[in-house]
Image (tube, rainbow, N blue to C red; front, top):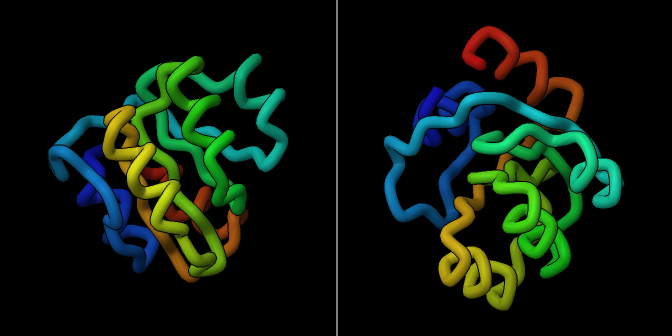
Length: 108
């Protein structure tokens, strides 16, 4: 699935992305960043409510390409800047984690 397809499936928006056609190989859902570091597959989309700088740090360590922030949570400017620098895409959706994962399950 691409970033564009993921955003559309979740009634979401792409906030930061180098290329909206970036391909994502998997989806991982967690709000526990230590769990993400240990278990999220590379080239995946992380579904979470964690909207702070540590999220991007974990994504770079785990080779995660994109983060989908749920509940339309605010995405701070410093998070956007770090995501751009680290080349991690940021998406936002009004859905909760469960419903976002359900919608993306058929695309992954």
